Image (cartoon, rainbow, N blue to C red; front, side, top):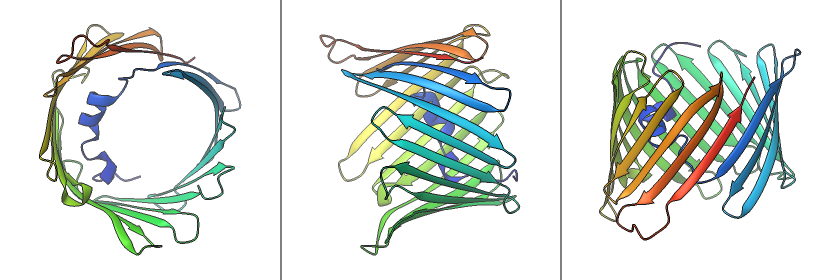
Length: 276
C-alpha cells in the first residue's frame, strides 16, 4: 500500500483513541492462542451490566487473504474476509452475518501517494452506499464522506475534515452530522517513544447549542505500566491503569465518576487480555 494521506476515518483518530480506548465499565476477559499452521483463536467473555456474553473468534491468513469468523452466544456468526493487493494499492473487505440475510457488506479501499478512496455498499436490494475520499500527504490531508440511501434516494450523511500530522503532534477539525456539528482536537506527544501524551477536544452541536470540552493525558510510569485520565466540562472524570503482566498480555482497570454528583457510585471496569 502507498504512504499517502490515509483514510477519512483516520482524521482525528489518534486523539479519539487516547480519549476513549480502553475506558470501560464492563468486565472482560479474553485469551488468544496461535497454531503452527497460522490459525489464531481468541475466546472472549464479557459482563455488561447484568448481561453475560461470550464469543470465539478464529483468524486464518492465506497468501493475500485474511479470514475472520466470530461465533457469538446469541447464535450469530460473523464472517469477514479481507483481500489485499487484488489490484495494486487496493484492499477489499467482505462481511456477512448468519442468520441475518441482509447484513452482507462490501468495502473497497484504494490508496495512492496523494489520495485514498473507500466505497462501501450493503449487499442487498436498494443498498446504503457510503463513499469517502481524502487528498493530500501524510502531513496534511483533506477529506469528505457521503452516505446515500438508494431506497429513499436521499443522503443519509455528509461530513468533511482536515488533518495536520507532525512527528510529535497532530490536529484535526471535522464538520459532521450534515454540518450540524464541529469537532476540533489536538494531541501532543511528550516523549520520543510516544508513550506519554496530552490531548484536548472541543465539540459543538449547533442545533442544540451543546458544547463539550474534554482534556486528557497518557503517562508511562515504566516500560510495562501506563495511566490515562480525562475530564470534560460536564464534570465526568475518567481514569485507567494498564499493566503488561506478560509480553502482549494486558490487565486494565478503569473507572468513571460524575464530579457534579459525588453521591452516585462510580463505574468500574476490568479487562484482562492474555496473548502468547
